Amino acid sequence: MVILDKLSVHLLLLLPQQPDGGGAINALVERFNEGGEFMWPVLICLIIGLAISFERIISLNRADINTQAFLQRVKEALDEGGIPAAEEECASTRGPVASVFQAGLLRADEGIDAVEEAVVSYGSIEMSFLERGLVWLSLFISVAPMLGFLGTVIGMIRAFDSIEQAGDISPRLVAGGIKVALLTTAFGLIVAVILQFFYNYAVSKIDRLVAEMEDASIELVDALVALERGESATAEKSIPESVGEREE
Image (cartoon, rainbow, N blue to C red; front, top):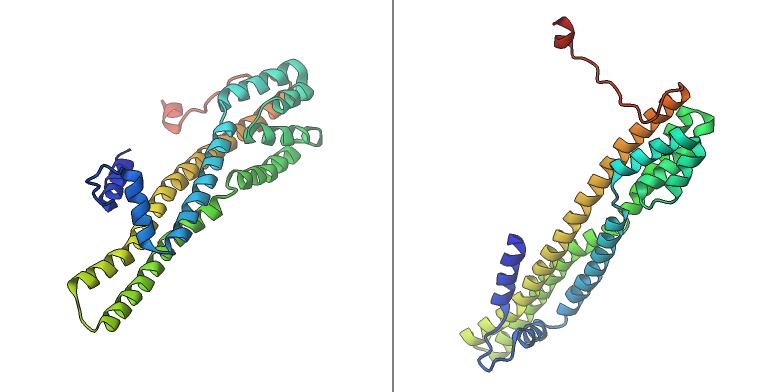
């Protein structure tokens, strides 16, 4: 929130003062028009980047479930109805964890090794689904400032052309040209900061989902091993004593 507040302050500083109360929107449009044609590619980067960000956030939030509660339901289904009941529980639950579980349970009749291979393979596929679109988001984060810098360079060239045609180095002429040229860089950096915030949020969300998926997959394999031995899948695993505790 502090970053967003600072970003809002810097954005407001870019807006010209409106003595007639025209509003921030009109001021922003005025600055945008002053920036020239290179403002449009930067704006396109922002629009597409925000669309990807919102789609990823919605998808990741839908994929996020209470993993421990789901794992407990799967273990109870294994105890009560065996593999078919656990498969039904996975099929009725959304999210990558349930999909990985279902892929492993479908290979349960082939042995634990087959289950582990299926979990690893399908886990990689689910991870690629979670990361879908982030490459493009990262691209727009990099491209937006570059387009801004390019617009600044072109604007500076035009400013010097104006000075050459005028035949006089007027402070007003130089300042006006440089101001317009720097607007594209400012907006490009603002776009990159906004998209970077959403990118980092999505990456942290994916990392947490993948970690939960890996931990839950290990517990699923342990539950299947216990089931093969005739033990309860929901039985608590005893924690081995440390070397120091055994010596005592």
